[in-house]
Amino acid sequence: MADSRMAGAQRRAWLSAALLSVALLVAPLLFWLLVPRPAPVMPARREPASALLPPPQPERAAPREVEVEAPPAPPPPPRETTAARAEPVRGVVLDPEGRPSAGAVVRCRDEPGMTASADTEGRFELPPEADGCTATAAQPPLGDAEPTRLAAGRDNVLRLVAAGAIAGEVVDQSGRPVEAYLLAIESFVPAGDAVRGSVDGRARQVTDPGGAFRLNTLAPGRYVLTVSAAGRPPTRSSGIDVEAGRATEGVRIVLPQGATLKGRVIDAASRAPVVEAQVELDSVTSSGANAISLVLTDANGEYALEGVPARGPFSVRVRHEDYMSKIVSGLDARGTGSARADIELRMLDDGGSREELTGIGAMLSVSSSGVTIAGLIEGGPAASAGLQQGDVIVRIDGENAKELPLADCIQRLRGPVGTRVSVGVERDGQVIDVTMRRDIVVR
Image 1 (cartoon, rainbow, N blue to C red):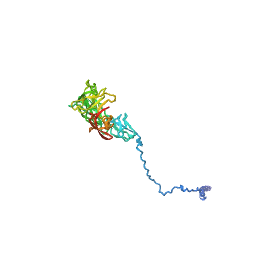
Image 2: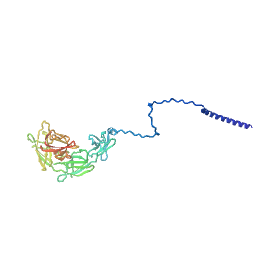
Image 3: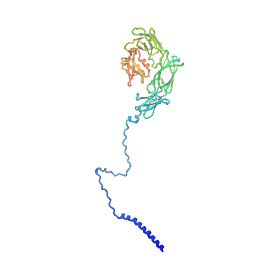
Image 4: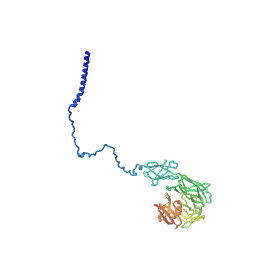
């Protein structure tokens, strides 16, 4: 009985505790729902001034990506101001085997004055202005490199062309070998459009029982050779074409026996013989391949010069320390084996003139364009006819002179006093023809 009363008391205690807990949870909620809340205090709204309002915007759909056309790109800066233009033009020169070619000369054909030399590694450098120029390289005896357009910013390569050779023999008029002679290159015109170059024209002594010769390391182009031997005047070959890397063989040069020029050298005023005056061939070759030695006049002023050309015009120069030297031109043995020329010399005076000759009064030289007038004697036929320094000789008496050696041009322009000669010269791209009367020229 006592146990039942105790259990009922415990249940009432738990129930009271549960009700109290519920009341504590519900009371705050009822208070928040039943008690009135004060109105919120809002800041006063200020309308912006109409002048500051943005313009009304049209209704738009949801934002999306919009393509915008880019403004046109500005034009590129001038070529002179580009980075590439400001760089030097660099490259390398190689020989035909691909090895560096030290000392080769690089030249812009568009600007002939723009050149550079390759260093020990074959490398060269040109100024920025060479960008875009067409260049070639030269290093005799190799052939010029093929024209190549250079560009800044890259390693430009110029490759020289392989050399060629000439092989042949020298014989007399009967076909027998001439065993000892002088041989030289008289003239050279490079192949293609390369600039006319110079070659080693020094004479070399050749001795061979069969008269054979061989010239190696030749640049491609057309060659004229000169041969001379004792008693045999300088004789030129016809044009010989040489190709890169190949030998032109079977060349045969006939060296004829010369004639003898005899005469007497006297004083122009007293008519007395001039003793020990030197008489020698003049301008028969520009290469030095002249085996005909000078002779001296004897006590009577007589001389005999053996080995002068048997045919065609030639000149001799006469010298003596007390007299003006004299060039006698227009001589010709005409195939007879002998010719005669008596020569008068004038004593030196205080006027300063030291040489007398007959011709047109022009001094010639070889340039990249051909045989060129290098100077004029004032008052001479050439100057009076209007020829000028720098004129290139292209015709003599109507014959093409573009590939004539220098010595041939000289002999054809010289001649006896009073004879006429017509000359065509190229000047500023035009050919001008003039006719002159040869005269005595003193210089």
